[in-house]
Image (tube, rainbow, N blue to C red):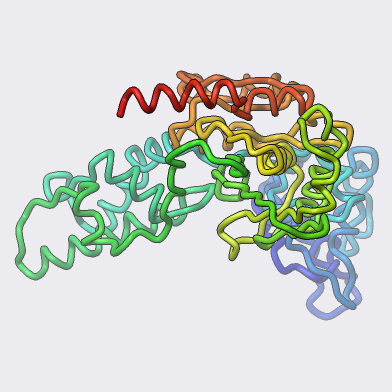
Length: 411
């Protein structure tokens, strides 16, 4: 049985109405059990994070007893007026975010986080299910239209940005409609959609990938972000200029990320001697941190080591390896803390061709959740302290001189 809780505001939807009211009905739980014809059905409570409240009561409070195995053996529906045993019912709730679910209700649930699909998984779903479904709905056979693998990957990467496949199915339906229209107009009989002619059907790409860094730069660190649409690459830029030691942060960052930037600067100041930074530099220079794509809000603590590395590079003048991406939260003492979304972040790095990722040591256990095809040809460097991060990410003067000589020889 499925119950959609999105927009439900009346407590009577769960507990029912008393029989003294005209048109009284049992609650949707009892109605579902009657419809199922047994007392141990599977109940799907959809969109539990979108329950509303008003003067008619709070449905989420009524669900407290329903979902509590210690209490639901004597659930009383107002219409029945007698206890009903719900202990044999299997309740499954779904939601997009947990923040809007009241904490007492969240406490009665076992949370299972489902990560978004990878590009490879989306290709498999599209080839085995979405494309045949849309071909059938539009009356198109395989002999009329074919979507190549590279075109499908381009459709996923540049025309849809999501955790699921809803927009991907919509885009495939758009392709089918365009082809069906041309067939109705008497055009050619065979259509092969490739990555070269995809834009003729779908228009210009909506999402362009971040450009790969051309060279090792001072003050530019490559970070890994986790969004609802999956993993992404972010570049953190830091520059210094004459001033009085103030810190400027731009790029539409949230409060947590701003605090991470302040903590990063404090850590670098505390390690000034080890990093060979003169103490008076902090009173004579202003530091400006910017995260590009300024129109997109960004927040979270996992960019801590990226911010710290960018600041340390800007103040020491040492470049950062362009082919190393990093993610991790950092404390004032320089301890690197665990982060979430390692699978999605690793996939984003692989898409950009980055082979080395700096990851907190505490996330080593999360490698089990990452498929083998993602880990192939990738090196995960596990760190516990910020000193280790700087030792790996920053290019020393000796290494820089050696690299410059090699480039001159090549020229």
